Length: 140
Image (cartoon, rainbow, N blue to C red; front, side):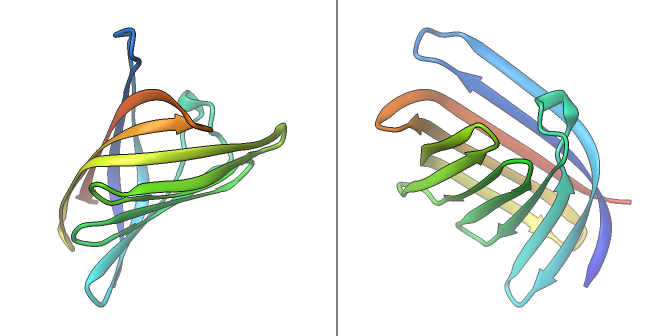
């Protein structure tokens, strides 16, 4: 099964100093289902400075794997209590990024639904921020 969907993506970042910033955009994407999990594919927004990057999400009941490809590359796994180490590859160099997930909520069917992720972002061994990523999926 492959279908066109409308995605609403909202990311919120809060630093230890209480500074909060959010970005939200709506984009078209595709939803695939295979066995007992889903795949979501969409192009990132220029609003976030991520033009030219394609994001794929492998969505399972208790785990979400994000893979960004294009101008920059990054792969991360979101699973409650799991520290996911990875690298963020940019034209300017490579950064080691780690993600410690505290919440992974998946309510997704072939008709649409939502994904809610809460996690701590670490650069090297230093905490950068607490983050929330909300993705809503609707059939077109």
